[in-house]
Length: 155
Image (cartoon, rainbow, N blue to C red):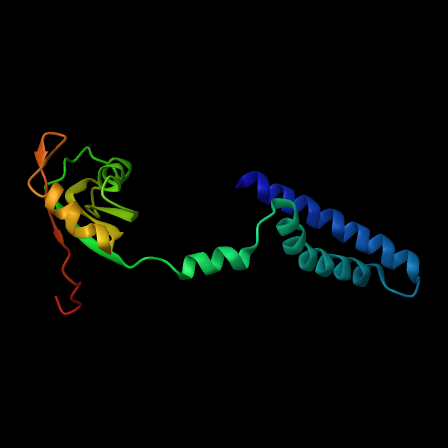
C-alpha cells in the first residue's frame, strides 16, 4: 500500500514537471505558475487511468462485485477468553462461512477486553456457526453464541 502511494506520488510529480516543461516551451506567454498548475491537474487526471493500465484492474468490475455482496448477520459471542484477539475469533468463525468483521468490546477507561464481541458473518452460515460454536470450548472457555439483538438507542 505504501509503495503504491509512493509510486503514485512520484508519477504525479513527474507528470507535473513534464506538463510544466511542455507548456512553458509551447508558449512563452503562459506564466510559470499557471503552467505548473496545469501540469498538476493533468497529472491528477492521468494517474487513475495509468494506475488501472499498470495494475491491469478495472475498478468498475470490482465495484460490481462489491454490490453483489452477500447479506450479513451479526452474532453475539459471549464468555470469550480475555486473551483472545480478533484474528483468532475470525479464524474460528471462518470455518463456517465468510466473516466480514469481528469487534471485541473493550473497557473505555482501561482498554482491557470485556469478554464478549460481535461477528458479522454471511447470513446463510450464521445458523451453522451458532449450532456448532454455542456451548463449545475455545481457549478453555465455554462460548455463548447467538443472534445479536438490534441496538436500541433508548437505553
